[in-house]
Image (cartoon, rainbow, N blue to C red):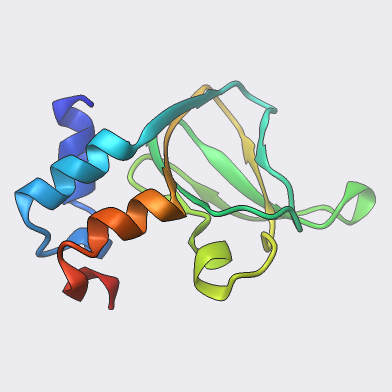
Length: 124
């Protein structure tokens, strides 16, 4: 994991107060994913147990299908998404589409929990 990615993780409000070793372990378990414009990161109503952090690029959050499709947000570097599927244990609320070449860090629920339990106050 690059120093830039570790710094990006350190700057997340979610990880405010995290010990340096915890941030480094999160960086180690992250899987980097790349998407081209128009590619779908995940579909609305799909199941997923991953959270994503945008390293580079731009994505849109899309609700609905076909003629009923509505863009409800755009997110860029430093933003994260996918957490609601973990928190609520429900299908994905919306789809995520890449608008430009995009690099993401993907964290599985298992990896997040195993690292964050080393500093339990971060889970609240």
